[in-house]
Length: 278
Length: 258
Image (tube, rainbow over all chains, first blue to last red; front, side):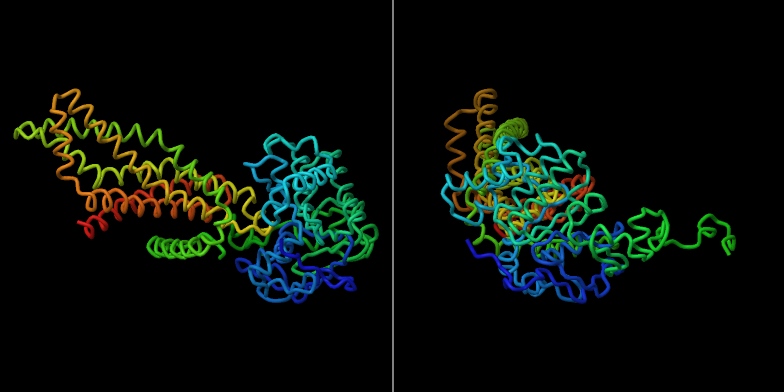
């Protein structure tokens, strides 16, 4: 197994984004975005839908290349990495997909064992123990022989989490981890994120819209809108920073800096009343 | 290599871009073959799926093609008193044309569509992206084993198809219509040439068709939009594009190999 990329231990910032610019289909997603994700903390990325939160995660993991800017993960500039270097970096990153992305042909056990089988030559007994250890951590050791189609949404997400932590990564990225979960499953996932962060010291970045859940789990919040960070700080106090962005986003206002209407042409003209909207 | 669907408003340029993109994808597949050697088990699993699981349809269709061919030939050749040549003509038709072409068309319908649908659904459910994130190359793990399995399975399936066709011809010609058994086999063995008919006809053509069908199926799966409608269109495109490619390639190969 190749050694995953690790950052220098004295560096308190694990992910450093500088001048990130991304244009997709003519729309500017990021406009010289700058942010630092602290090591060993739980950081939440929030913002209105379509502001590029998932795109930011894809930039961090090298799934997408930006038009300009640097994304430094553990001191390595991700867009400049070769395929081999990128794969080596990813061995140190766990990624929890919104829909879990379990391999549907494999059982729960084999899903968690998959990265180990691909990158290590562990004896079967040791591999089995590692997998059961991870499944026990997410409370699903008893579900090891189930197939993904036999799992509920919350269970599938916990299996995906067990798979994401199977290599004890330095960084875990959670893409909308709370979507579609009932209160019990949501609390289980919240507890797991916090426990993993506290016990293993894993740096966690989560993209989420659930304000109350983020307040419970995150140490730091970035609010992204219009391609930039418009607010950042402690999740419990950021809502009171006085800006129109935080007031609308955390207050749930229907209209404000984030417009209710998607940009469109003249309404009167669209209805066939020329000059009606003057 | 990043595999992305080609979009063009013009049908001609869109088709040319698709062919070009498919060619680049082939190069990516070929380059990934050394990396896919570590996934031998996955290649064998796919070989079982696209090869062994296609045996029933190939055997049944081969039998009926041979039977109907013999029936038609017998009635035509009886006008000229040449029914003894029926077995020979059945064999030559099957080895040179019908065997590879019909096997490839059946293979595209049975295995090609399932490969496209499977990969398309893996894309739609982020399984391909998940592999990327686990530092597992999806081209080497998903695409290349399916491509190699198709490449290996097609000549074997074609051999089975041809054998069943000859058997079907024998059943109708000898057992039912009364052609002499010795004449049937001796005429056939006298004219069938190992190099021209078996190597060039059965093996070379089916190898080429296997490569084309597998490439199209895998390419369509990887480039399909990750939606249910996208997967449906991709499976349809696999059958349409494979059928056209098989028949066009058959003409080119026949022209060069004759």
